[in-house]
Image (cartoon, helix red, strand yellow):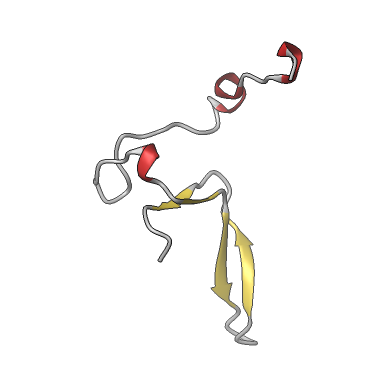
Length: 68
């Protein structure tokens, strides 16, 4: 790769995503322990048909520390 192919992702995403030191439950967050991340999509069940649909959740990042 050449220098021009590298991007400054901190500058690009810095305003949109802020890395908190704690999760929503107040537990310490360590990025090196994360095994799975989801950037803004989640499943829900449609109440009228019962089928599972994907719903956007903008400005949210979900993570897991296990693959279970």
